[in-house]
Image (cartoon, rainbow, N blue to C red; front, side, top):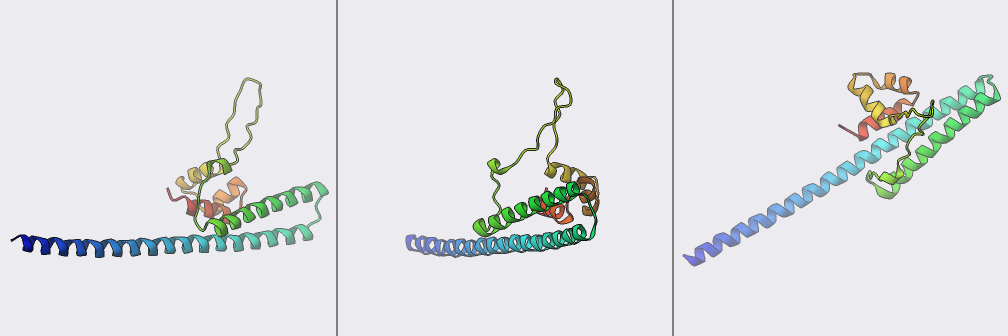
Length: 160
């Protein structure tokens, strides 16, 4: 009787080890798929951003605008290039999306009156609020004065 229980116990242990090994392989394949999806999404975002920047540069060269307006547009292009560089560095060095609380930049708080505080909501919260209202990505981009691909990326990377 004891030998029978040992055999059953041995078979159960083998079955459990096989199951654990199978689950481990399955988890590894899911991680690889998720990493490649995020990498693909970021590459698409970068390509769309480059196209938008090229179109903006063409419009700048075609239009006769004042030097102040040119400076504002160059500043906007430089900000987008910096964001693109940061996104590219994060995708290459980490291969996963990591949020670091110290990397967030909070918008400045503007004071109209000395005793009145105003708080501005972040871009992410504005995007999610408008998205919950049912606005399309194009409408959100126009309302917040941002690019469509930037809004689309924010929505895709934070499924809530």
